[in-house]
Length: 491
Image (cartoon, rainbow, N blue to C red):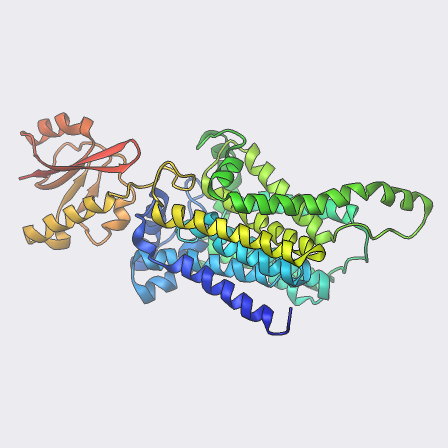
């Protein structure tokens, strides 16, 4: 590439990535989990309260990092999802920076594939932890690679910072760390080359200190909740049990979701995987002969980074496939390395034919854009699509507007009383966080005050008995697949 071509094309990739991530964020209603996360953030925003709970929820970085956006934009959907969009954009930027590992063409192709990936775009518009997991994980890997290439100790501290943020984001860090160590070890064994730099004791200590310090600051709520540090250690046992009991799906489910939601990315990544591992495997006999004969090690192997990436991709897919707990956003952890491998595929094909590489990249980007437009924008809450997992019904805003209109007509506004007897009601606490008179009972209480009631159809007889007469039915509204809510008025 000419001198200015790479930064110009990189800027174009980032602009496309930003447009796809920031456009019309509130179009899709909040998911159940987004509503829960929004509720915790609202408590932190309004009262400065947050305590890490290892039994039910993931790490604290999501809330603290979103807090500045809420200070600027207020408690709005755009502020919450804006953090995920920024993280998704940063992930693309880091991929574009991996020129030394993937090659200029490979890094640019990887960034472009990630920019338009349906999985990456969808969950960059989703206020959950996964977008932070992948950006911190990729940042840690990029910092480690920079250290191996330059030997500068500052990159050890940078890696510690990224890993500290990753640990404070989600308990699955241990899975990623194990896969990364195994993949790196196997890559070093497969690929001969110069000795790797060894960090000094000071560098190791600085990196470890930054890692532990960052994690401790977040888990302890910046010193306000020391018990959060204990919870950070307890979470592994708790989530190991959860991983066996909740959201159980077949072992191949993540691969199926990726194929249904991001087929072009899967094909490009699989091609890169083959172009990296096949030559490495074929060259192994020559390596063993060289080792036995004392001859110089042959250089007919792909680079260590590419081999580690390929093995790591297989490893993370296997790790998430072996765990019974499966939700589609976990597939983002596989989609990102697949995009990097897709970049490797374009780089390797381009070494033989630039035309073929251009056609490969154009086909992958075009098909991905088509898939993203259909699934992330035209039908983002369609339950038949892979990423819309038990998603809030697209008609949910009708329920919200009906409640708001009733409150306006009654003259009570945000002080309107609403008794929620249904045990299924998320993301309503986030959506109606400005309404302090809403009570979330999850069952029919012993008494029901006058005002609105939100119930399940099966609770209507009990509500009539408690109220002394059947309340007036205003309407019925779908919450998510299999859950219908009835809005009532009790005089």
